[in-house]
Length: 137
Image (cartoon, rainbow, N blue to C red; front, side):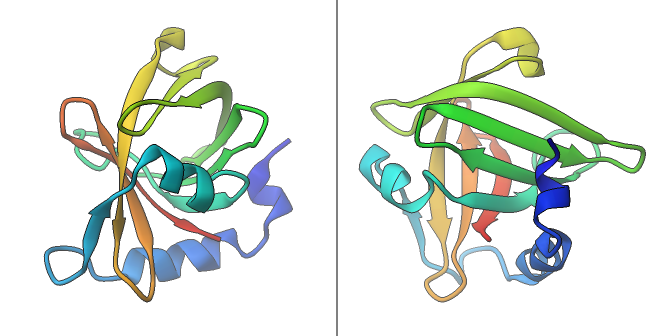
């Protein structure tokens, strides 16, 4: 199942999300695990990945499902790449183990909320580098 095909307005929403300003002009808050649960679980998030890596940044759709599973669709210029995994809240954010990505190794992230009117979320790797920029669809 491709999440992108189920949500036809995803790319339009992504385009709006990518046009949002970033940087110090916006309010930035680190989300607690409780806030992650309240604001992101059960939602469809759209955005882009590979923010700090020397790779192309692709449109993505991500879902934190209430049952502890996670779904990811990445639209490259050639295909839609999908993965599923298991996630859980940690002391500072959340951790996920994907079936394919990172060869099934758990990775933990924190989440920053940026902006008050148009909220975007940025996931941060354990080493402090940004991972994904997302917004609730």
